[in-house]
Image (cartoon, rainbow, N blue to C red; front, side):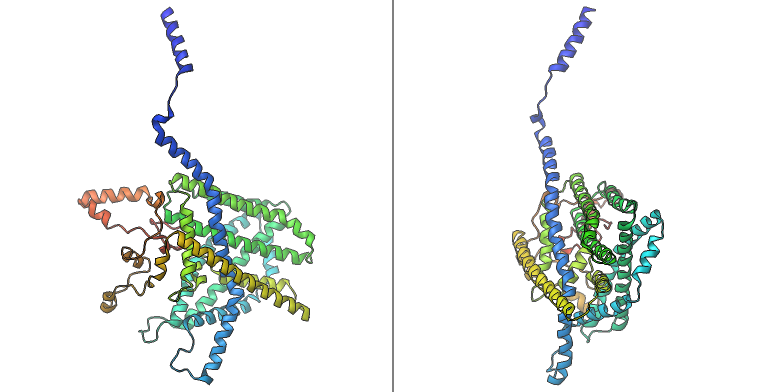
Length: 498
């Protein structure tokens, strides 16, 4: 009995005095500490990217109101003066001018169509629905907006290329007019969809118990559940970041539209603005909080360094700098549309429609105010473009991507044998990969460059390769990793799209 008692005392003494040494597993604890530091760095790095992306979207958005009308006027003046001066063997209009004129005509036609849409009737129709039904409608509108953005830029690109491609080529399209009508229909329908979104948000702001607004904000937190527990590659995270930038900018414009409509209803009483202010701050704060939490846990679960957001910023900066080159093959606003899924035409059309219906212009003083406001917008656009261009040059230089600026466009570096043989050329996504070995250095490497794949894909590949005895060849035949510059908002990476 005494021996058992001594054993119990010895056990208790050992439990109270035993020790352990964390330095015996130094690598493990250092890694855990770095994960904590990474999570703490995510808000700062993410907001840097979001701020830079916001001003990129703002630059493309202001372009529609400021420089695009002036470019359209210059193109139309060229059309009127060239017959008098003679063509002299030159084109009637340059490709960029043709695209500008098409954008101008699309905006004018769609605005005339939007004038027949009754915003007040739409508001009361939506207000009469139940809360749950409005919540479902709002979620459906978000999905439809992503689908419209995906297919809409393809429609616009097809129109621009059909209108500007060399005429000596064999006609393999349906003509400029059908493409133009499809583009007009797309911009009009997308603007109507965003108007319904803004109206639903306006109903949520004006509801007495704010239950609909609370439900709509809680939908942002459901987004965390659908994202953080999935495998993410670096390219997938780039897509998600671009989508978050576009979503945040669009929400700011929607909130602006809601404030304009409410201020009009209260005769522009400034006191009512302070009534709306808490709800606006609550919506913006919830959006920022959800983005920070989502990105922090995605980077944690997938061992992605916080430095990857610097690479994303450099990729967006490269788009801006390359669009200013003499050999640029796309307009910057179109580049932003492809990269982020942000198409400014429908959103600008809706804002013009709301402003013109909310603000009444009467008298010469009102016209002078409009002129001064327009000059102010042009000044803001120019200053924003100058600051963005300077900042982008710094980012590109830090990422050591200057030499890529002088690479020829994908159509120039394509295989000549493909042209002669009549076989289809490689797609845009595969062309840069074919020349990756001979081109300038790629983006700076980090620990996150090792892409993650879904377990199902790896298991399937191993099973197939084991059965055929060609495991090495199967791994070689996989699609090579994509450079960040090749990833747009709707590129499929790892058999999934975000």
